[in-house]
Every structure is written in structure tokens, then in C-alpha cells.
Image (tube, rainbow, N blue to C red; front, top):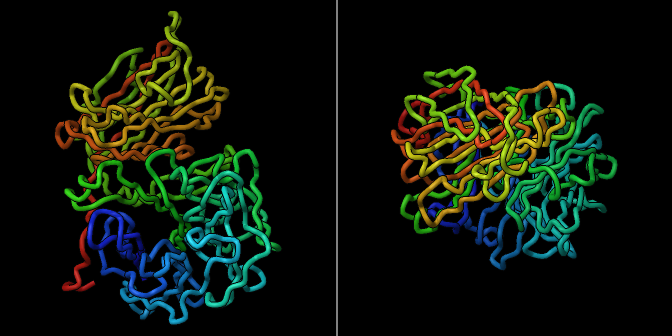
Length: 507
């Protein structure tokens, strides 16, 4: 009926964790949002200590059900069923909790606090729906799988969907198909020869969202990774920055899979109470299989964010010499959508410093022959505050270089009580490609995408000087053995509206 619905973990009483309810918002384009009344609150014995994470499933005929985790009056994690009171209401304002809840309780051998976050259902050729749930046994992270025909009565599978030793509790499990040839997303139930399945879990112990690509065997509801050395929890990461508890859904209107992700704060609770809110969602991202590498996903901001673009500036072939910083003269530097490409010119002169690669200690100040180089975002005139987004190479032959993509928050803020980590990872760069990044800047959020979205880093920063009109943007090159030639296109972005739904006006 024309609305995207987002339900989210919400404390209506305070900007700190507690009284967890389901907030509800709707949007026409996933950029501009209207807040709606709370969808579900902790008001029954089976969810009195929290209406926790869950997922919607669209059934044949357009029926909608939600499975969610409730924390009971005895602090046991159980799965509950809810459905809209009125399917003809486009806003789905009222939700009914099933009278027979809970529909699932922790099975034998699973701890009462280790059974949560049911997935969207998918249907098999036998007509039964499957739902996966995150758990653990000892230190082994696991995904349980259940079958059902009515979302009330469930049968447990003899096998785990998957398990990985040493990874600890799996939260917010997500399981979905991706097409290995094509640019469209797939419905959660699709399973064909040209499909791989993504298994994703949020690692409770490390607070990182890991995923792996593999094969789903419908006959016994098990999943096997393509590369056991990059299994769930020990290999690929959806976003190497401040990012957790992500979940996808299928958008049938535009045939795409969309990823939601949560950016949580690193400041103090007293700071959050003072500002009156805590945590936010990233710009939604499309999810595709990377057919060039065959080994990873591509994440990219939804096209709707481009509707915020205003004026643009272009910079062609800006040369940045070793050890230098070049200002980019744009009118404002706080709301931006930027594309940057970098070419490398090797210098004959002897380079100084070891050829360090990686993002590690020293971050953007740690000079080596072939990096770091990139952008300084949310910086002030004196560079006392800055957030570098950069590449670092092992050599200048891109197809064979080990290339790292990083964000260094160590000088992002003069504030004392905030985290200032260095984030990053390797990014595949093929021999026929240029080094490229896309960066979305929104005052205190930076979302950075390398090589078309192969490696993504979300940053939550807290500038004190580089704010509003005082924020600047620079190119930098801290490599010792190369000149950098940068080409950029930079759009100013308008603000999205996020406000209560205007019930007093016509829809």
C-alpha cells in the first residue's frame, strides 16, 4: 500500500536501554520518515521484560505475521506471534499478540537466555515454512531452524542450520538468497541453481555483524559455507565500523534486498540523556552478490538517497604529493555524498618508512611507501579534528596489491568520553579497476563504501570544533613513495524529514 515499515527497539521513557518496546515508523522512500505510535509494548507475562528483536513474514494473499522474542517474567527468552488488527490499514497501526503465546520456548540443552531473534520465514517445496533462531551451546554459535505451516505449531529440525565453534552467542540471524548472475534481489524463499545463500549473525561477544556465502540444502535444512576458513563469525563482516544488529528484507516493488543496520553510541549515558536520544539507523543499503570476485557481497546506499542531492562540485586530477594536505573548497562539508577515484604515480626518489599495511596502530599518521591516502572528512581549519577515510597498499600493482580501506577516528573529536577507534579491513581491487570510494557524511555519521561496496565502514563521531559552517573537507597523502591524483564529484545533501505522522491531515 505504498509504505515501508520499520519497527525498532525503543525505550519510550528514556535515552538509555530499558522498557524495550517496538517503535514504528513509515516512509514512502526510506529517506523521509513519519513516527507512528508504539506498535507493541512489554505488557504481558511473556514479554514483560522486553519486546525484543523479531521479523515480519508476508504470507500468500498478503497476510502479515510477526515473530518476536519476548523476555518473560522469569527472564526466559521465548518466541511470540503477532499480527495486524486491520490488514486494510496502510499504516498497520494496531497489532494483536496471539492469545496462545509463546509459540516457542527454549528447547532442551539451550539456555533460557540463549534463544532469540527469529528470522523472516521462507517456504520450501513441501509447503512448510522455515524460521531460524540464534543461540549457542557453550562457546559454539548456532542457528536453530524450525518448520511450521501456521506459525503457531512448530517442529524443530534434527540438525542446526549451521554452527561455528568458538564464536559465542549468535544474535539477529539473517538468512536469504542472492543471485550469482544479475542485479536484482530475491524473495527470501527463492532457491534455484544460480543462487547462493547468505547466513549472517551478529556476534554478541564482539558486537560485529559477520556473514558468509554458501549453499543451502533444503532437503535437511542445513547450510554449508563456500569457504570454511571464512565461516560465519571468523571471516567476512558486513560493516567494519560502528554497526550491529542488522537485518534485511525483500522489496518486491523494486526487486531488491535492503539491509538495515544500527549505529549505536560511544558517548556516555549522561550525554545521551542530555541530547534526549541514542542510536540511529544507517541509510538503507541494497545487497547484491559480487559477480566479479565471487566471494563477497556488495552493499550500496539505496538510490532514494540521491533525491537529497542539491548542488555539486567536481574536481578533476587533483595531484596530492607525499606528506601534503589539499583543501577542497566546497560551500558546506557537513551533509555530503561524495565519489572519489585515485590514481597512483610512483616516485623515483627513495621512500622513507616501512611498507606498513593494515589499518592498525598509528592509523592515518603511520606513513609507508604506498599509503595512507584519501579524504579528511568532518575536519576543522587547523585539522585539530578530522576523520581520515583512506587506502593503504602493499604495492602499486592493484591487481596483486593487498589493499586496505580504513577510517581513523583517533582525532575525530576533542571530547574525552567517546570511543575513537581505527576501523578497516582488506578490500579486493581487480587489475582493471581504479581505487574508488563513496562517502556519505551527515554531521556526526560517516558511511564509507570502497570499491563499489565490497568493504563498508560506518563511523559515529562527536566533533566539537568541526561542526556546521566550521567543518571542512581535505584530500591527504601520507604515503612516502607515490603521488596521488584524485578525481571527485561531491554533492551537497538536503535534510531528510523525520517527524510524527500528521494524523490531522489527509494521507
